[in-house]
Length: 394
Image 1: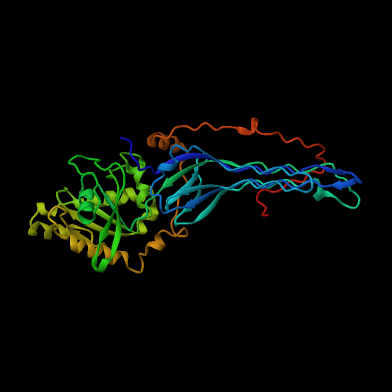
Image 2: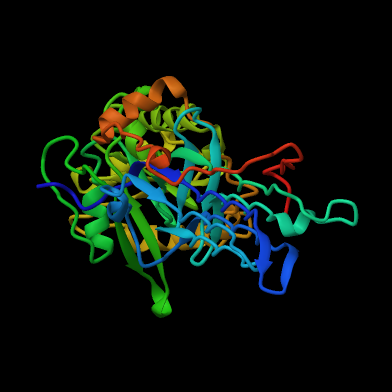
């Protein structure tokens, strides 16, 4: 069964071209020399990204491969202005990052509900010959064509917004912990990579307080280089305010496993090391109190350590207290982590984009050229054609 969780899509966007200006001379009864009265062309529509908290995946864009804005209308006689093309809005969930599919360059980031980002600006309409009349040129026989449309192939990536992100090897007990602390029902089984898509759960705390916890598939050594499912889901913990590392008590060397996980995050994005971290030693019901005390002496001292058991409930209240304290510390506010000024998005490696598309099951998109079937601009005498700078503001 195909999953409804889609966090990676590739689409072709095209803004609308501006309408051409009219080249018309007024000839009516009793006014044979009415002069120029050609109207301006309308502006083309823009392609605009809009944050929408009602969406939680990019599923609605999976089969919408082309998003085109409307072209501007042509100017007419009697100084009639062409109609402006309608803007095309792309509603995306909060936490969506946009990259250029051809160069891998980071373009923009949509982080809150209602945020609008102009991805492609529509072309401006051309001026009609009425705009070019002067005292010495009373009957200009030329007008401007509209600005051409802009086209861009983009990759949309969703990075989940959550307070706490779970980081651990496969079968470390992440899904079990999420199901024990929240009402989420992630898949739990006794084999690696049980979790194939991120899961979110709301953890209740004292006095009707709560925070959001995100579970991602297990990380293995080399995940930052594409091994396992690492590259596909590591991006989801980039926006988490706090990282909860989970290592089972039965591991041969808990400190070494923690350092391996930390190194994978560093290789993927060094900025992630600036986040606050908590280490949870899971499956602590398998060890006694004496062994627990011995393990504590060997663990890192630069971060809070909690021994827990999601099955028996041991240490869960202490874990929630530690997580809440770290989340609300002055140096670890979620708004600071998700701020566009502090969250650094690295450009994509162009050589890996095709591999990513293949891994995500995204098919190659055929770009439809509708210029061949659109109305051809037929404007004579462009000797005094004025060229607009597309970057220039209206």
